[in-house]
Length: 586
Image (tube, rainbow, N blue to C red; front, top):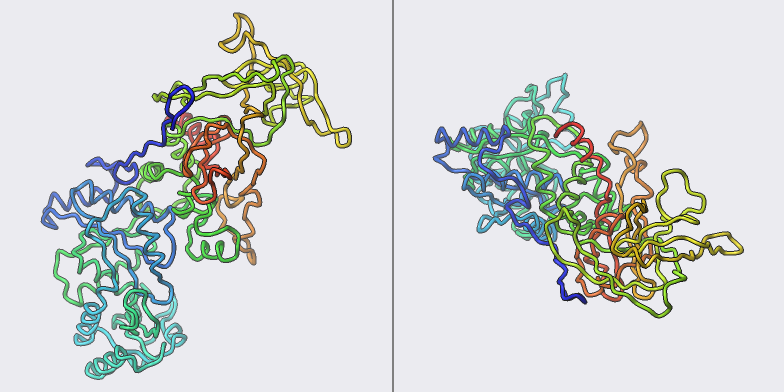
């Protein structure tokens, strides 16, 4: 994009390292990578590493999924393996092709390419049915005719063993005939289920004859009406891993108890070793947000946010619209690492990763959010001066600058003026001097107020023409503020996004209280009268900037256009985590 001085403003430079910036160096240390390294050393899988990222297509991915995505794809890439993108789509009532497409878009955005390794559990329905028949033939599964409530009551509690179903000892032949009739659609939803025959007294309640299949007369988004009998997750997932020859099945800690059932199914259908092995790691929980899919759905459906791509949400669609680079998410995942114990992560770590990335890719521009008019009384009327202003600070090794028009009338930030300032207020006040960024030193001589309200409407200042290139020796001006030319600045809408909740753990609620009680009423502040320097007019939506002294922003990819500029704040310039890390020597 051309500028008056023939310099070209650098666009955001994508760093398309694998995993959106993940550290994929061999030998990166965590317990999962150590396990993979040992399996390779021992030749357990004949040198193969095959992982999978297996979302259910019933919602949008969030940053917690990004951790799993970076881990699975990263480990495969570090070891010259492959990672499958597999959709575990076994619930026709909640799944939709729109979620499939959004998930694929998000995975690509993170920087990953699954190549030819795109799979759907629904493609395995016939094979899964055959495995279920094997379990029935081996006396390891039976058709149960108890109701849903009865099954729940028979299961027992953590302190009391369950009770066997009266249908548990149906003859194998009867179970086979009934299961075939279930497949044929002869029964209503809930009339029968297929259960594994394990142990109703098991201390692991998941092993108390878990459900394997249930009847659902619902059309599947891919299979249409081919099936009315659908496998449950615990039966589908392990067998899908086996069908795809997965070596390392990585999942979060809430599935730790499921591992026993995972192994039981593979054992009892006759999957030979070496076979997939499940390993659990700590899920991601971040302060000031929620990652529960159920709670995110409520936030969207109840109108607390504007949609799944609302920049306040932790969805990848929301983070993308907020201007978060995928490389920053990858760096954040590297920073928090992989652990065996669940814990909450300080959101300042994520904000630090975002700032650290944007510092190198977001050119600096001037934008006044709450304008206050300044008339420079000793500057010639009608004169416009072009001042050279770099896009990058000295600590960013990039070049490029633009011309800022300067004239008699400018706007400054209303917060940069006080009539009766406190100590250590180094901005503008009556009789005080301040430097204008990339421009002159000005002094406030007079304050114009609204006669009815007393509101400050305008400042009358004078400028020192000898201060453009610096100050004479011995003269000091402590404050520097930003500004825009009144005659040239462009009107814009600025959306100041903040943390969605007021407390670190929104799910820690008192009895009778809902997590929505902790919503932050100031999580979005819209400023409709902001002014931005004119040079951004030809920039396409999606461009990122640092508004000097204000924060990092993105031109809204959806709402912004040349006739109506809209900017979303990605993150402020306050960096508490960097201070903590520096203090602790991290």
